[in-house]
Amino acid sequence: MYIAIEGIKGTGKSTLLETLLPCLKARLEPKQQRIAILHPTKPIPEDHHLEREFYQHQNNDAYFRLLYAARSNYHASHTDWSADLIISDRSILTSLAVRWQHANLSPVEHYEQVRAQENIIAIPDLVIQLDAPNTTLLERYAKRDRRYGQHEETLESVMNMRSSYTELYKWLSTEQTMLLIGKSIPIYSYDTAKCTVHSICQDITDAIEQNFANINSESLVKKPYSLVH
Image (cartoon, rainbow, N blue to C red):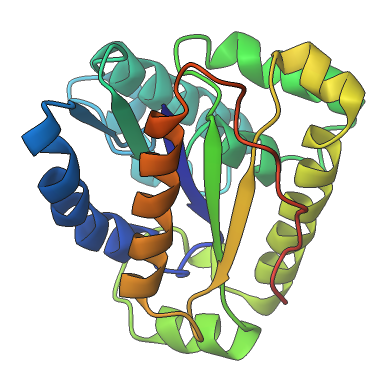
C-alpha cells in the first residue's frame, strides 16, 4: 500500500509525516509489517549536474521539470516497493498539479508526459491532502527563512495551486482516468488549521489497518472528494 501526503506548501506535510512514523511503527512492526519512506522531491547527491545548478535557475520551469523528475526517479529507485506500506511526502501528483493550468495539453497528454518523465515512481493508492486557510499559510511562510521557493509563497500561487489540485482530483475521479491509471485513488482532506496532527494520524492508521484487514478483498471504496477552503 502506497500512501502519499500531498498539499500546498506550508500545510504541514513534513510535520504530519514526522508524527505519523512512530505511530505506524508501533502498530505495524509488532506484526512484522515493513514500512518504507519516500521523499521524491528531496535533493539527490550534489555531484549531479542538475543539483549543482539549483540556485542558478530559480525561474526556469524547464529546468525544474528535469530536476524534479531526476529526484523522483532517483528516490523511487532506492525505495523498497515490496514493503507492506510505503508512505511519502509528496508524489507524482505534485508534478501533475504544479503544471496543471499551464501545460497547454489535454489532461491525458499532460499525465502521459509527466508519467514518461517520472517513470519509476508508482501512483499512490491513497492520498492525504492537507490544506489551510490562506491567511494561515501566509503567516507560516513569513516565519520561514529560505533562499528558494519564495515565488510559491504568495497568495496568487496558493490560490492557483489549490485550484490545480481541485481540477486534478476531479479528473482522477472520472471513470476514464481510473481506466487509464488502473485504479481509483481515495482522497482524504484535512484543514491543518482545524484538525490536530494526532487526529489525522489516527485516521490514517485506522485506514491502513482496515486496508490490511481487507487485503484480499476489493479496494477501499473511494470517498467523495472535497478540498478544504
